[in-house]
Length: 197
Image 1 (tube, helix red, strand yellow):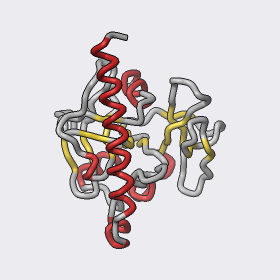
Image 2 (tube, one colour):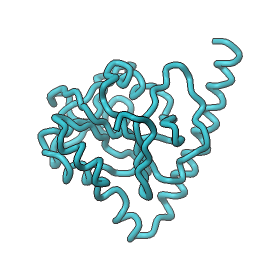
Image 3 (cartoon, helix red, strand yellow):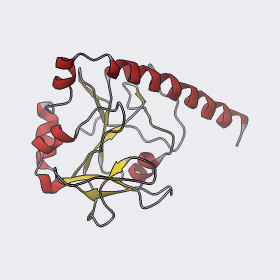
């Protein structure tokens, strides 16, 4: 690892720590009505797009991440939902079929996921969690690179980052392996980041 890449890794980790604190504080202080209203209905352009897709990928929220599953369940056919799945503590992540009411299990990274026997799926539209984002599509994740590797293997899949508005930063420090988002959805706005939507 060069000095420059080591410095970038340290910079990103310090940024993750600050953004985790910011997200935790923001989510803990949301009033009841704001919490009920947040992420309950997809904006019209996204709802139309999601309804037209054979498979839509979401995620099961952990901690203070926004919970998108109720919103996605309303917007798409339940048979078309898929969530991230890890077969072990390995770099590879795939998506598995999930329907509202299906049990989730604790995966090897301590995140909720579909069971191992759920059917593999390849979503054409993916809603992914994040720690930080910028308006050009930069996404700062947890640091494992699972979503970036999945996006690199499935470049045609549309990528929508989901986070609280307080997670926005001026510019996400990017490495060559980081894959840009097509849009970001917060509790306040839908931000287009490229020209694919």
